[in-house]
Amino acid sequence: KLAEGCEGVCIFVNDVADEAALRVLAAGGTKAMFLRCAGFDMIDLKVAKELGLAVTRVPAYSPYAVAEHAASLMMTLNRKIHRSYNRTREQNFRLSGLLGFDVHGKTIGVVGTGKIGALFARIAAGFGAKVLGYDVVQNPEALSYGVEYVSLDEMWARADIISLHCPLFPSTKHTINAESIAKMKDGVVIINTSRGGLIDTKALVAGLKSGKIGSVGLDVFEGEGEYFYSDRSGAVIGDETLARLFTFPNVLITGHQAFFTKEALDNIALTTFANVKAYVAKETLVNEVK
Image (tube, rainbow, N blue to C red):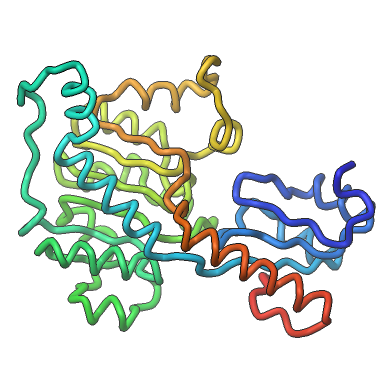
């Protein structure tokens, strides 16, 4: 009802623009969908094309924000900062259970070396780590930071830390699964600030329970739309897998906030307004998703 009669509708990453929603919007007069995010897996592009809906996005709002958040998750997990914070607030200054490791000299795997992945690789290299990369196309920027491109199987075997920075497509769904986890080093650290569907969460839980996975940092979760960006502090989490993840002391979950910096919000607003302006003026939609 809110969008009825509106030619354009602006949506975010946690909104659902599936076939049913798009058909209702189109019937109400909507002709354009303006996404305030880089990812577009929440919208059915095939149906949008069938209905003649223009779709635009914000391809790069602040790659620094997401790359820095991934590094923050990595270091918080490694040095147990979240656990130490809770202890010291209760005046418990014991060091037991807080042992970390030097990132310097470790091997960090980066799956997806686009804008964000390349910047994360630069941060990782700054720690003095060996950086491995995987992507369908090698990024000259990533190469300039010393990234060594390898196959996924080689990355699984060599990396002490693995960070995901790729979009969610049918070909990338559950990139991290039971088979890939079995090929990884014991105690591997897994970071995901990209899309929840890149990880088979049940396999992730199994890896944590067995001790194969040392720690996990997640800013995204498969099926997060029902939970993230809402206050559910007084409710029971119905998703058993998500609820189980919260029970692990070596799992750190943030609520899809990796993008959430002032600079990123400014860029999202400016680019979205530019997309709307171009559509109204019937100009070329440089950020159109086809």
